[in-house]
Length: 113
Image (cartoon, rainbow, N blue to C red):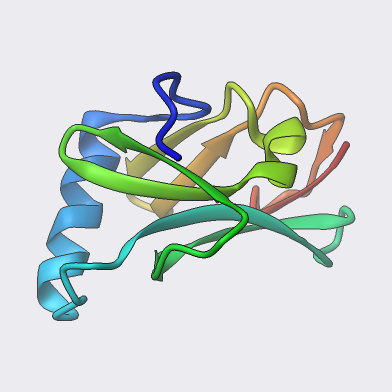
C-alpha cells in the first residue's frame, strides 16, 4: 500500500547523488531506495541505505522521482529524519540528521534511540 506522507526527507543534493549512483550501478528499474535501521554499530543501531526490491512489510513513498522503501516497523526510529549529501574537504558522503537519535557516534552512521 502506498503512503501519502513521507516518513523521511532527502535533500536535493542527496537525491541527485542517489540517482547518479543508480545509473552508474545499473540498478534494475523495479528497485527502490531502501532506508532502514539494523542492530549494530558503535551506538546500537546503524542505518541501511541501498537499492532493493519492495518487500511485504514495506511502506513506500516517492521523493523527487525516487521510490523509497522502508519497513513499517523502522518508522519509529526514522520518522522525520533527513538524508543529505556532504561534499567537503575532509568528508564526502551521505549524512543522517535523525531527530529520534538520543546519541550518535562520531562517524554519524550509527545511533542509539
